Image 1 (cartoon, one colour):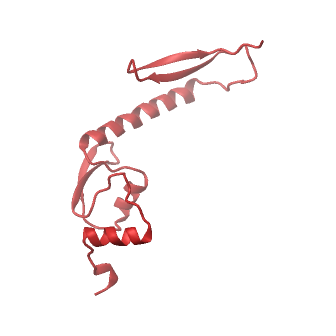
Image 2: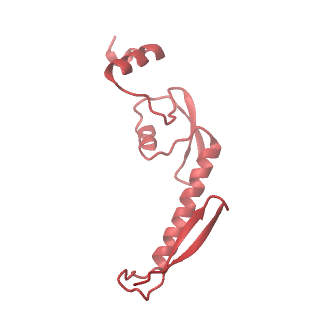
Image 3: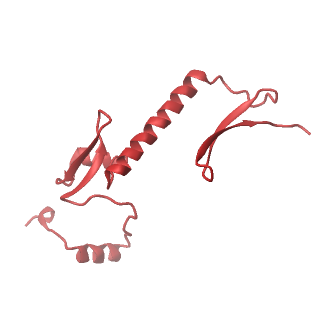
Length: 129
């Protein structure tokens, strides 16, 4: 048998990792023959079974964190991406260069308040004493 053909049990894998000082990741990752969800090129949520270790599509999804244990988590991430891009596009279209040295120029920022579960816009005011 080639080394690539050897299947380790979970216990063997755990022992080898322990010997090498490798800690298990706390982040969930699909194992061989386990299904996961991802965001496809059309912005739709797809489900796929991880069947080929080393597959470039799978490896790329892992690299950019585009894999999710549940459809709900994938949908939440997709919504985050949409909101981020909407805010980024708005900023790109509407923001002028900020003159941080100009104390008379108003400077605003957006903040999310967890206790109210809402976004708020604040005006940053600097005073020279």
